[in-house]
Length: 288
Image (cartoon, helix red, strand yellow):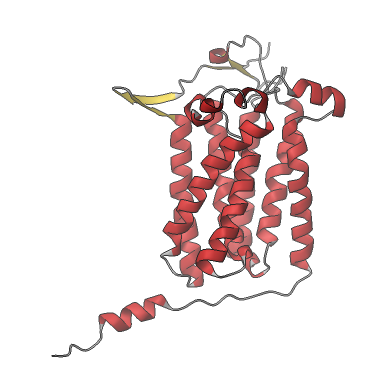
């Protein structure tokens, strides 16, 4: 007899009065903290101004939350939210779409590059997407703790019985499948940046990221449960769901960026030496 995993994790880590800390929110927070430190090391490695970090973080946080929420609203449940617009603000009830978050982050990076860095957007993209892969994996673990976004029936020994979701039969733990893919991608991107100087080929890291995020997503969707009822008609008509349809352009874009990057010569970026400026100011002779 096969031993399946009986899953009944509490989505709430702890509560203090009316305030509850959920595993999902903790995963988001940890991801952003680690991501901030990773990008900070990259900025320091290349001599970029440190003050850009806080500005970039603000851009990314707002874009991620707003974009992911609106992505779910427009791509998956527009029929409902168009009739109940006030519900759009209730993010705590769930409903975030990674495709919407990705589109919003892309827009935010172009704005950040135009307004703040005055550098090509590729310079920011090829750093930012590295920790985003890590954050994606952590968020999927948050989905696991919430017993949500899992797959269809399976007789494989690692099938999960999600008791909190009312399941009595083992299902594919697709949250773990995706998390593992994203963590592996994170390792590959870190290796590309720190060991192969891939950042010298604009958009190469970005292209690999898009392929590594959305190709596994496309494949895993075949064993994932449908998230909203409206997708059944789409699957019946086209053989793929909304998540797969939205992944195709990103996969193609990723392939195109990799080909483009490999056909161009390497580039080296230069930045003002802010540390030298600070040192000069600090040791400037005192005048009476």
